[in-house]
Image (cartoon, rainbow, N blue to C red; front, side, top):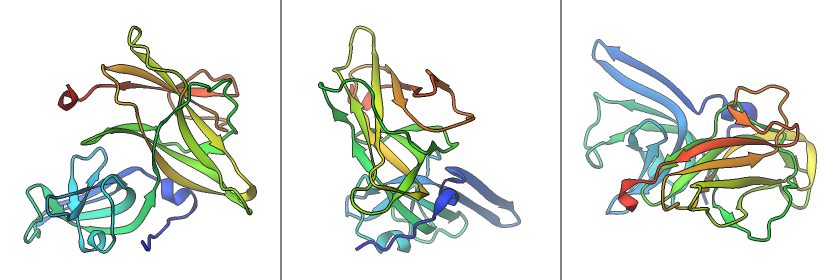
Length: 242
């Protein structure tokens, strides 16, 4: 069983991409606190591709767990570029990886019977813009959010719903982030969640509709009717899929 360190409350979300470095006088290090995806070499050794950095890393800490390719992690990674030793492969750096937290990566759901949008309201989407990652075999959309803890019984859940088939003529799609708050108690916690997007046949404009509580927000949202908002993204179909 994986023994993951969970960073509680909003400290988990304090910075999806926080960088610090030390250059000069023989020091050439980088420390980054961010999300990433697990991949494996041809020999089955796990490494982590760090979102939005272009860096791949591995470590003894990473090898101590039985990760599956595509798993999503949040961790602090420190790379000493001057002391790499024997690398696993070109451009996969040896690193120290601490505070590892695994979070969900779900498939989107197609539901042609989806009617009026009646999602429960998320306590909050945290002040980190949702972002798209293009991976080897899929494209994912990641949210940072706050959820209710569960008193007993059913836990809350989030699903990304596609209510109708992609409209090739308009090259647009609307998806719904549906939250079921479950059996809540007063306390709350924060987390990340990723969803695999449809593999659209062409470049596509995507609106993702969500309900969340926010008196103020730095998000670039539309459709603010005090009930729901939407985030707009552009999916650029990878050339490798053509």
